Structure formats: structure tokens, C-alpha cells
Amino acid sequence: MDTTAVILAGGRSKRMGKDKIFLPLGGKPLFDYVWEVCRSVFEEVLVITNYPQRFSSYPVRVEKDLLPGGVLGGIYTGLEAIHTPYAFCVACDVPFLKKELVDYLLSLKDGFDAVVPIAPDGLHPLVAVYSKECSRVMKDALEKGMLRVADVFPSLRVRFCHPDEIRPLDPSFLSFLNVNTEEDLKRAQQILAGGFPLRKAL
Image (cartoon, rainbow, N blue to C red; front, side, top):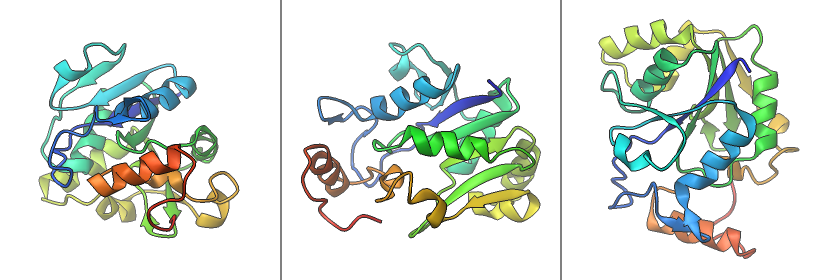
């Protein structure tokens, strides 16, 4: 394949108040949901984290951030580390990521530097495809103190994937549900159990 999965797992989980990567959800660690989707689609999965030892039981390559800069720094590190022309970059805390959405985003990448979905709540640059060529632009942005991923989009050829394209694949847009807080975790547990979400879907 021409794309590597890059899972970003370097956050400090400030809003959760504790490390969330391996919190139990439906009988398995939160990380495993994204990991299982990625390894079903991609030949190689790369994890970007500042705590490599936590992933010693997984058959993945692990890299530490090259530059500070949160999400943008993590994506930059992933693009520098991959051996393929493209990376599918995804947060470690989206347990309802749909394989069908990943496949669709990949199908749009030719001729673009990035494919970024837009849900009703806005852009989701951490469920997105990036060309390795983006790394130069991202490095320049980081060196200038620009930390938002969207800050680099004006310098890239971006294919935005709009809600009407996503809805047939993921009607409730749950692929973009991040588990950032205890409330998010409870909602995810409720969704897994087949109950109603604690708040309306996106």
C-alpha cells in the first residue's frame, strides 16, 4: 500500500485527569478500537507517543515527537517517519472510527496534499490523510510557533470531505467522537451497550 496508519497517542489526557489510552471500554482498552481498524486496512501502523514502553505488547513501530507542537507536531513526526507517500493520521481516542470512512478518505487522496473531513461540528484534522510532502510546510509552521493544524491548510492542496459525503458512511458521525472526559467515556459505554447517547450525536 502507499499509505501508513499513524496513530497519535502523545496527549497528556488533561481533561480526563488520568492517562486515557488504555482505559477499559467494552472489555478492552480504548486504544485497541483504533488499532484494530488501522491494522485491518493498512500494512503498517505507526504510533507517535512520548511513552514508547506503553506499546511494547503491540506489533507496531513507535516514534517519539521530533518537535514540540501538540497535534501538528505529532503529524509532522509521523510524516517524517513513514516510508510511504501518504499517512492516515488518527487520534488514539476515537473508538467508533469506521473502516468505510477510512477507505473513502483514502480514495480521494490522489492529486491532493491532504484529505480532511468536515463534520457538522467542524474540521477533523485527526481523522485525515496527509501526503509526506506536507512535512516541510508543517515544519515551517512549527518553527514559526503555529500550532493549529488548520494553519497550514492555506499552503496545501486540501480536499475537504463534506458532511453530505460522510453521512451515508457514518450517519451519526461517531467516527469523530473523541473520548476526552469521563462524560465522553460514559457516553461511549452507553453507545456500545446499544443505549441512547448521553447527548445528541454530532
